[in-house]
Length: 142
Image (tube, rainbow, N blue to C red):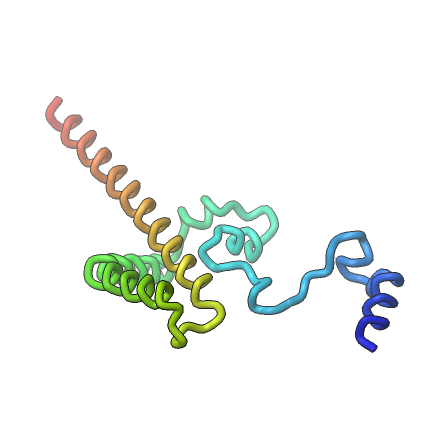
């Protein structure tokens, strides 16, 4: 039976891998994967010794275009769609609608998290640009 198999597997150490060294064995499914925007993905998929800040500084033209496209999409979505979409989803959750699927609540909070992070970063970048241009103009006045 399945319980006997699991009992034998846990007694023998699981046949190598993480279970053999005392770490819990994680299932490899969608829910165990790292969310792209969580910040863990960049360290997970980067080369050993590669600095995340260094890779941002020498980003190629494709990376810059993709970041610009994502930023443009986010600006348009927040300006035109974010409020109505969130209100609609909130109402669906309140009604406990049958149109909702199992992972929709998690996805809803990931979307909220992503746009809040994007807003904070874009606002911080705008403030840095404004400060930089203010310092340049004051230096020119000297």
